[in-house]
Image (tube, rainbow, N blue to C red):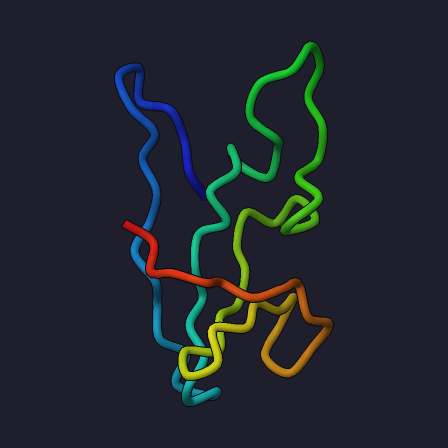
Amino acid sequence: MAYWDGKKIVDFEPESIPDFPGWQLIDCGCCAGLQWGGEEPRECKDCGGSGRLFLHVKSRVLADYPGGPLRGRMEAERT
């Protein structure tokens, strides 16, 4: 899960999943499962507070888990 190191947002590299070829576990980009900013902490609506999403590499589809509920599609590579 992404975090603030005092100077910049730090996130994690995608991880391949041996049991699910073609899928990667990626960092949602939220702050440890919470939305960035705001007056009070709120659970991230994109990842449900887990801080991670699953990406089907070929189709760029995001899901809660491989083959599970879809969360949208990633249009471009993250930089």
